[in-house]
Image (cartoon, rainbow over all chains, first blue to last red; front, side):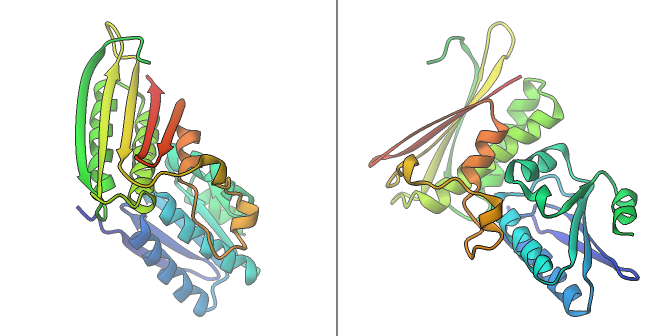
Length: 115
Length: 144
């Protein structure tokens, strides 16, 4: 029954993009956190989460994303999201995440905002 | 109180085990699609069911470690709304003792959890919660 989350990371000059594919639950959230903290450890302070391959994120997964946002705030870095389904975007707005993380319709809009 | 007949009803009894909420979400998706809800509404129903199941799994402390979910397609002659009832036989809770989560506080708090009810209420049209010593029943409705 477990739907394992797949991640791909694209390390660019000054910006890293994490691509997700699958269900973001507690395990999925932890996978993303591991990747994010690894990137932070490598010096990245701008992270973009591209959720184009994710159709559902549960509240446990989102609470782990909030931990990453907190870490980025501490480091005066930036975390943003792009390619969210309408329901994931609505959920992020219900929770107020947009106050702390940018939400963009697609990757090019997000990259432009980082620049 | 249901005003219209039930066109289709499905009941699931799920063990409180990791990722069992996904099984419930698949049934919710099938019925919402049967009703020809928009893809956005289907997704909203699906996530609300996931959150209701997770709440039962994590907070009910039910001895039988099971959650019973009834999906009812209501309307006549066409489907009008989907009613989903999530029941556990746990210890119950007092809604007045559940603090509403706030992102400004959560972002600095060690406890970043506690969003389930807020998400459910934000995604569904109607939500009713009945909770006591014999368990908790959450009834959620979404219009087509």
